[in-house]
Structure formats: C-alpha cells, structure tokens
Amino acid sequence: METFSTIINDDKPVLVDFHAEWCGPCKMMAPELQRFAQNNKENVRVLKVDIDKNQPTASQFNIQGVPTLILFKKGKILWRQSGAMSAQQISSAVLPKL
Image (cartoon, rainbow, N blue to C red; front, side, top):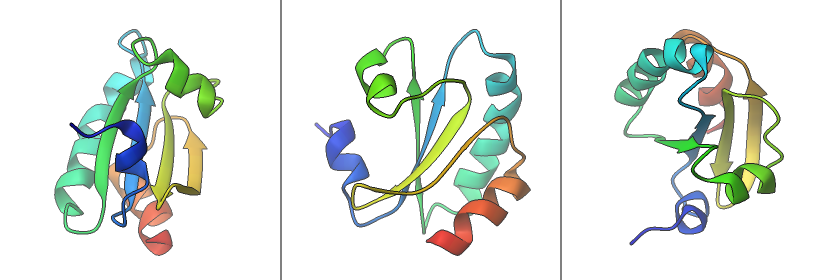
C-alpha cells in the first residue's frame, strides 16, 4: 500500500489538494482539479487529502485554510497556494515547475 510519504517522495511530481467536505470553494474547485488531472496525467499525479480525516498530515504541512494546493517532487515542495483556482490557473502555476 502506498503511503502519503512514498507518494510525495516519488520521482513523478504530485499535486496535493488539501480540502474538506464542508468547504464550498473546495467543492467548486473539484471539477477544475479533475480537468487539470485529466489533461496532465502523464506529467503529474493529483492527490486529494481531506484535512478532517488526515489531521496529522494537514498539521505537518501547516494547512491553515482550504483548499490548499502543494506541489511535491521527491519530497520537496516546489509550489504552494491557498484558495480556489481554475484548471487554467492551476496549469499556469504548476506546469512551469515540473
């Protein structure tokens, strides 16, 4: 079984979406994130982490608000941003860092 640690330490970049069930902007962003994931599945893995079900992980990365996106590669944070974004905005922010 893959753990969060093995996933973010992989060679393939991982975009982690820290979200919550009760978060309106998270729900609005879900289809955008799905579109981004679909369009970029060759280059980047997208992982959703519910902060209420994974509190130790959320506090490890000091998640203050949701949604928060963090791009990892080999365990290093390459980019981080809070707030809802469109698929286009995510692409513009993330793809140059891959």
